Length: 78
Image (spheres, rainbow, N blue to C red):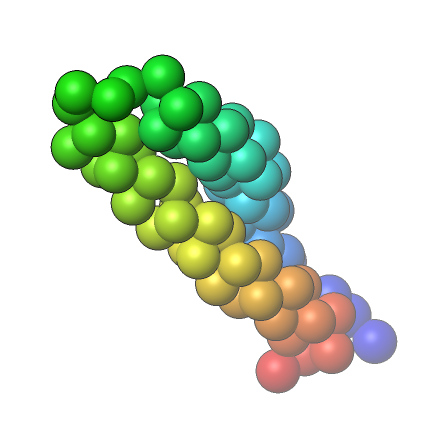
């Protein structure tokens, strides 16, 4: 039983990006909700930040599934 080193390397790179997104996406969502509370006259910026946060969260979830699938493929030689 050998581990595919090429897939494992790709998995580690994806994991590093996933960790970055796991840190950045909740912070962006928090900033968006604070901007919604503070800005009454310029709501366009606040909604733009909120849309960015939602896109980041969705991409984080998708990348998480792809990362774990890559690790499983590397471990079980697929």
